[in-house]
Length: 123
Image (cartoon, rainbow, N blue to C red):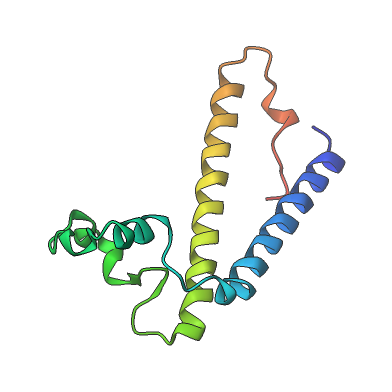
């Protein structure tokens, strides 16, 4: 892969991440306040009150930080965009990491792979 192609790919990824972050930060406050799919079904079928008070999800470490789609203890006008920012960065980080592992795994199993062609010495 040439340096020009690598630069274009990097610019594409950075631009995509920037657009995703802008959407997450500036459009998330305009999201519908109506219940999402599962909440709506539970309300329509009147089984929302049957939810377990001690649900397993409440034992997860991040439950104390996030409340629905926002951050606990932070004003809603700020909490929702911050949650969108954190979520977007988390998904990007996971996707990037998995992509790196997949590419590394596929290239290391290829006997014709020449690592010097694909490493970026500038990092």
